[in-house]
Length: 401
Image (tube, rainbow, N blue to C red):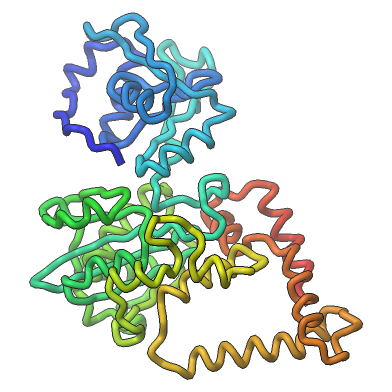
């Protein structure tokens, strides 16, 4: 994420000195000062002033100057609306957040400029659109809170609704970030953690008061419709609850609606997993080589998953080695049962011939038509699903035995 020097927001009097269209643009920008504002004008999304200069640098698009407003030359840059997704993808990879303002009024309905309203807020950790997501990697939004040597973490996979909390010693910060690899990180404005500047690809600072445990309890009980959070096992995690408060509020604001697909809250305990420090994870080359490449790694050797859901789960499992040996043993037994018996239900005539390879092949063949159900159902809950999502879900459900 490119760092820019903070500027004082414009006053209403300063905004009033501009043309009506620029006034509309600046008022929207005032509500989203730390983002790039894509402002729809006909067949283009336009950016103005400082946003135009920044977008021109990041996207290698033309920067122009056209006329004046409020005594200032209007610096402009734009991208065609039909290609906006590819530009959004590039900005998200750079750690930038983007606000999209669409034309919502009818031409000529008012004397002033056509009405516009924010329709989407796109940030690296709140992606749900298939065009912007990596099929085989989660894009996590994480909030970090620190109090008296205790690190509180809350993270959300908005693309499938998985919401988790954890409290751990502050010195494990780097190890936790290496394990989770968040796409975007939220921290209190008053928190000084220089290490995060190198660990977090997209770092957002929020007001300290947003990281409040009581607020977290209130927001989450209202969301889940419960009297308290005892059933989730978070009553002894006040620092993590503070992180959850900021995360939940931020995620809901970007989606501009309630997060209906977030139906549970999972607590992770350090005692559940083998502790691997950051250096050990890197040297083991679990999912990334020492040069930062995706191959050859343990994941690249093991990942022959047919579905993207399987690949993402495998990546998660490699970074979460369990202490309890009964769990991986149960997984191995389940795989053996699947390879040896489940193929009978898939119509494979060779299922009874004793060749596990053929039985496994029949399962893999059945899975080839299964879409990313996790992410499709999340988009349905967020009311952002497209017709192709619904048809893919229909075809996937039809393949179930």
